[in-house]
Image (cartoon, rainbow, N blue to C red; front, side, top):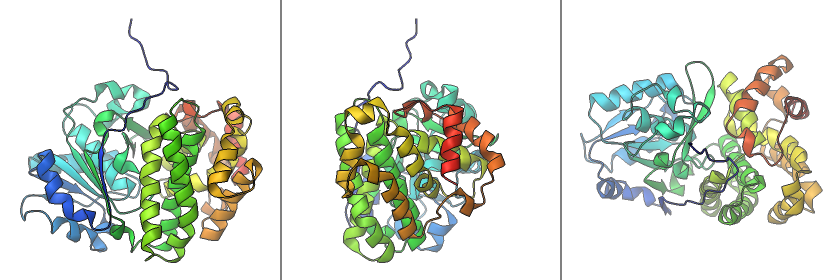
Amino acid sequence: MRLTKDPLMALINYITQIQIDFGAVSLIAQECQRIGIRRPLVVTDAGVAAAGILDRVTSLLDPGSFVVFDGTPSNPTERAMRQAVALYREHRCDGVIAVGGGSPIDLAKGVAVCATHEGPLKSFAAIEGGAARITAATAPVIAVPTTAGTGSEVGRGAVLILDDGRKVGVLSPYLVPRVAICDPELTLGLPPLLTAATGMDAIAHCMETFMAPAFNPPADGIALDGLRRAWKHIETATASPGDREARLNMMSASMQGALAFQKGLGCVHSLSHSLGGLSPRLHHGTLNAIFLPAVIRFNASAPSIVREERLERMAQAMGVPGAAAVAPAIADMNRRLGLPAGLSALDVPRDLFPKIIEGALADHCHKTNPRLASAQDYEDMLASSM
């Protein structure tokens, strides 16, 4: 008989190396040598290239030793991943360097799997039972984040849009980047709105994983500290992009949220994954920010939330007066940061609700929410988020 892991069973496994400091990007060649990457595929996007960050990173590598794929879309797709895989194989690469936000890092992870395994991306999706098909043959990845939000640089998963339109998670310990080079200097030029949206993504990760019911005290501690750092510094980072202390703390909070969310996420991400797959133009962090208040209100009565006073503990980290103030404080923070007030501002129509709900119920984050949501619950959360 083959045993399958209960999604609420705790997994405590912090296994990657993290270089975090101003100027850490200077270690890129050293880390390639340590890991044994001699001919990397550098995965990035057009924005990172235009900002000069790509040149800054590749100038530290031996000329002619690398090849660049800069076609990552804002929400990574299977189609773009296939193009990158073809380049990887054509140039006989032996590893991947991801430079950018969550999209290039997630695309790089897809390349690391599909360039070294047979089968389409769909066959490695978590909802298709794909985790068991991902092996140690996965190409090594070095992640160099240029935003402070997704935390994909230390995560064991990637989220990509399949050819059939589904936005799916690919999850495996083999997908954890071998090293994360977290250099806050690379985020100093990030525009205010993107700083706000990615920062709220980090906050969503910290809050949602802290609410997840699995037993994982290290994850809880990391998430709660990440929430405290992000809540304290996100407005400064948004309003004063050159503030080094704020940028360092936001990068740390992003990394901490992803270290912690191996414990599980929940309905915020079930909804944002589903809607993001249906409308790839929508920013993931912005959607998380919009869904957070409704999901927190839904979760408030969950036994594990009440028993362990999780909303009270988050309120303390945020410096707001009690559990009832947490959801309104998030909505107010979104307003102060200049983020959309709801889905209506993003032109999301109500007639899309059935498809969003269908995707949310099938999403890998659905079962790790502290309170299992029904289709009607999701409809209520969507209506509350309009």
